[in-house]
Image 1 (cartoon, rainbow, N blue to C red):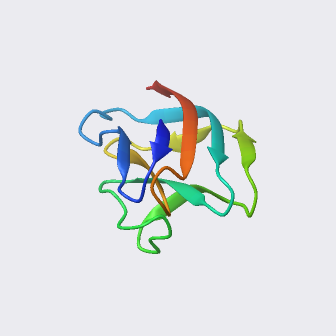
Image 2 (cartoon, rainbow, N blue to C red; image 1 turned 60 degrees about the vertical axis):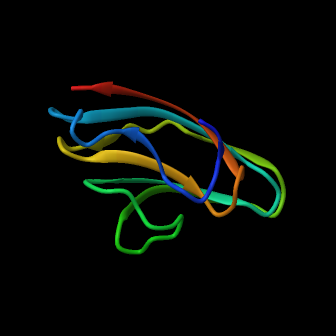
Length: 100
């Protein structure tokens, strides 16, 4: 996903996740002064800092930066995966996962 804005992008639809998912790798980039987040749950978050949703990864920096996360993350069946930023075009994401 490249150029994510302040509206959530659905990476994994909860209806498609019928047996669970293992997220294997996350590589994320952001522009200077921008942030973005990855959320998991049955519905999309309202903002990149939505406190009512389960945030599994957040990145923000005052300069352009790349983040790399490789520990497996388990999503139970019925959970979706969402990506959004704090501004238009504020981040990009490469992510790998396996359906169980």
